[in-house]
Length: 96
Image (tube, rainbow, N blue to C red; front, side):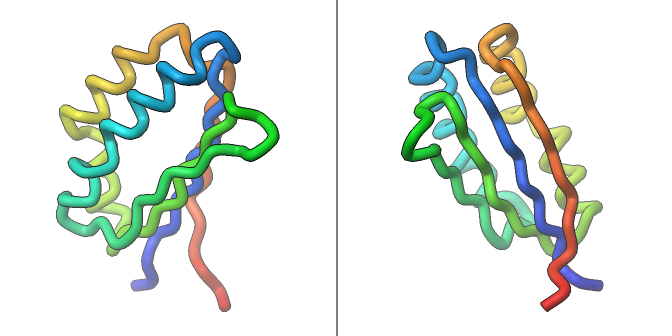
């Protein structure tokens, strides 16, 4: 089965962008240590400091689902409640 690619597109409230960044950065080490995590890279838009993107690759959807239910992701969601304007998640499969 091919790897699962996840694109998590996050737009913070402009006045909360630095806070959201710090909370997103807390996810990196814990997530990279999870079973099935192949790649977990955080990006920030060069023209919009409130726009973040995670580019992720997982060995399987099942292992990604374990991540989605992890304590560190739950803590992140609680911490940033009210600080996120929009969040879009795309599950993708590489075709070439």
